Every structure is written in structure tokens, then in C-alpha cells.
Length: 451
Image (cartoon, rainbow, N blue to C red; front, top):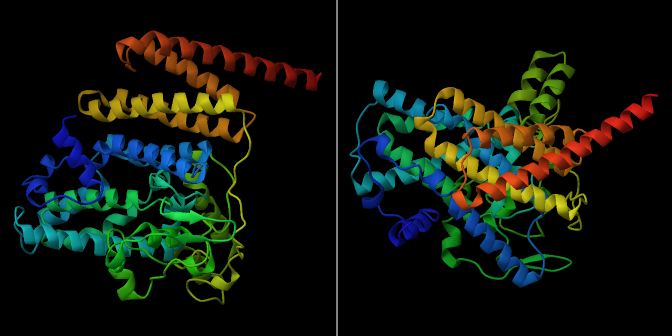
């Protein structure tokens, strides 16, 4: 990566790009900014970790949480391996068939208009995702971490993209798809850096902002504003929905400044790091609640009213019933061996490489190969979650994964830099042996119990 690409990549993370360098006539010419940002995500996460260690002597998150957040980010991008993103696909359809006028794709004023329109639309995407229970089932994934750091920004939902597209369709009546495709990515990238606490001084009783962005705090969404949004304190619930701008919250009455120490996470903790459970558990909960009621209006209320709604309560529920927080709550962080933490980190980095290679080569691979590698990635992320949760079946699942990984390496479906081929194969072989012995010992223990 040359210096020019590096600086542009960094600037794109903060929406600091000009219309001239980010305007394209055709949507096919729009770079995959989000995918290209993966190295910057990882680099900034390392910087944040170092800064927090130097500042407070403690990291801002645990290995379990960071790995789970990155896993969610990987899963959320999986559908784009097989088809163009749902948001841009539906947008192009409306543009091709229903547009009323055509704004110029290379106009600076059209670029800025699209910036405002995307952010305004995102505000309503985000607000509806909190106020409608069926949409919250997808969005709750992003709020499931009890930590607040840059990795939390990557904790995205697999299913939210299948409902968010509706809110952007009015733009397709006038704004070219290529302009929309640029801003929908930049809007998402901007929100990465605001997931941080590095501007907060910690004490045993409070978190106090020690520096802010001055007058820009009135206009831009900042770490302080977004920390409030991620809180489960009563004053934080359903506040600060903005993407790049906070002006929409100020206009529509959903703004709240940071006050008491923010306690992060879901109102009702889920206490797991298993990624598929995190992604889909709320749908199962919704189905149970839906079946609990006999009245059709109550059934529909479960889906279309707020997450805390009950019959006889306001549409968004009663926030006074939210479990009280004291500021002394500790995140869920069960102890597990250091050796396994190192193991998970190494395999996680290798899996990240597989993910990157798959995205970069998906157009020249067969659909069968892409499907197979996607299955391997999902199996790997599930297995890693089982290891972190220390589930009894983790050894058997990881044994299966290591066997598949060895086969993929041997048959050329997974590539590695030449100097690392032998070390990687050796590490995978040792992993295979370890989990084989673990599985064998478990089977022997089960057999002894049954005899």
C-alpha cells in the first residue's frame, strides 16, 4: 500500500474525503471501502489497546469479547460473498424503474446532499431498530457487548441489512446509486472510531470526559454521545441514534448528554460468546413471547412495539422497569486458560486471513468453492465461541474443524505465504493432535460413567 492509498484509507475512516476523490459514474466503480478498511480496523484497535494500557494499566476489553465482536463483523459480511448488498440491490431497482429526476453524479452539491440524506435515513433506520421489537431482534447484536471499544463497532448483525434498505429507498428517486454506494459506506466507517473510551478518565465512582470536540459536539456524533447510546442506564435508553451527525437527535428529541457512569450492554445479559446464539437468540425469545398471548393485537404488539412493551404499557414500555444499575457492575468475563486464549487468537488471525482472501478472490472462484469456504468460516467461528464458553462439545467440534483445515491446506483451498506454510501446517497438526486427545479422553470418561 503506497502512502497516498494509506492516507486516503485513514481519511475515509473519518469521512475526511472530498467529492472529487469519491465520485463515480457507475456503481461498479465504487471501491469496497468497508472491506478495504479491515487493516485499519485492526491497526486502530491495536493503537487503542496500547493507549489504554499506557493510560490506565488495564485493557479496555477482554480477549473473549474482542474475538466475539470480530466474529460478528465477519458473519455480517457473509451475504455479500454471494450477491451485491441488499441495500444497494433494492436501491438500484428503484432508481432504474421509479426515479423522478437524476442528480449529477459528479456534482459537489449533490455529494453533500447525499451525505445529509444518508445520515438522516440512518437516524430513522437506527431509531426504528430500537423502537420496533422485530427490528431490535437484529440490532441487539450490536449492543450485546458489555465493553465499549473499537472492536464493539465490528459487532454487527447478519440480518439487519434485510430491513434497513427500506429507509434509503426515497433517495433512489433522485440520487444516483454510485453516490449512495459511497456514502452508505462512509457513514458506516465514520461510526467505527466513536466506539471508544480513550477520552475518558476512569475512577471507582464515575467516568468523566476530560476532553471533547468543542462546538463540534453540537453537530457531530462523538464518542461521548455514542457511549450514551450503548448504555443500559435508564437515562441512556433509546437515546442518541445519529450516525455521523447528532443534529437529528437534537431536532427530534432523542438526545441525551453523557452523565453518570455508563454501564454497557443489553438490559438483560446473555452471558455467552457463542456467535450464532448472539445473532439469533432474540428471534427465539420473540417467538416464545408471540405464542404466549392469545389476543391478536397483543401478538402483533410483541413484534411492532418496543422491546420492553407489555399489555397495558406505553408503546415503548416503561423505562422505570429497567433493572437499576449502580456503576459497580462487572462485565461477564469467565476465566479460561491463557494457553487457550493464545490458541484462539492465533487461529482467529489465520481465519481473518482466510476471510480476506475469500473476499478478494470470490469473483474467480466457483460458487461451490465460495459456499464451502463460507461453511468453514461459520464452523470456525462457532467452534471458537464454544471454546471460549468452555462447552463440553467444544473439543469434538474443534477436532472436526482442524481436520477440515488440514484438508483445505493440503488441497490448496487455503493459501499461506511461502515462509509460513510449514509453521502453519505444523501448528494445525499439533492442534489436531491436542483436540483428538481431548475428545478421546471425554469419550472414555463418558463410557466409564455408563458402565
